[in-house]
Length: 213
Image 1 (tube, rainbow, N blue to C red):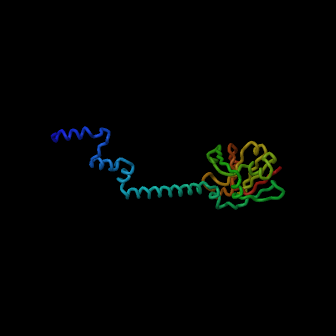
Image 2: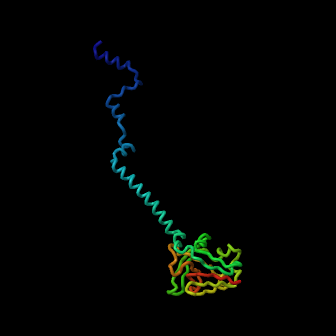
Image 3: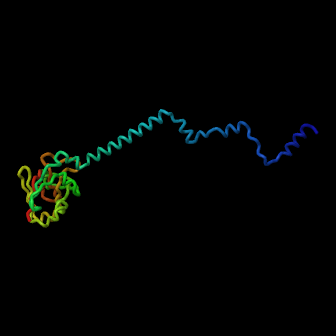
């Protein structure tokens, strides 16, 4: 038997299902990491760039938190009325004895935002925040219809009288600030806002409210 025939018989004797031993080149190729994987891509991002991204994200987060705090303070009724929060407004005729209320106390009631548009250019448009008259009266067991009229006295001696039909037909807001700021100094500590009402009854710098049954 020559050498060729001997080699042929060895090949015929080998189990055809037996896997061939991988070559060294194939083993190395199989062990090499897939450069298209997430880890591979991440490894190609410069370390300095990754640090910069983290720093920028932290700065944006701090800025957002600070901005929210400023916006909250800017929109806070307490912040708007701080300069005149304890200014007293005299209330008579509502209880047996006269008493006073302050913008700070009024701010603890349910507040509404109201806008009134004047019929003349001089009257203009005003907007404010405060409890409405019915909310204020409810604390003392009253409604606006219980009174024949109320008299509003202002710091400049201006007087406004609101009669029963006016009290029941219109929503009257005891405004303690504007929507995004304090009342102007000349209008503090409170003004009336009456949507759809006569601008001549939008009293400001209110110092006393007298309820007449």
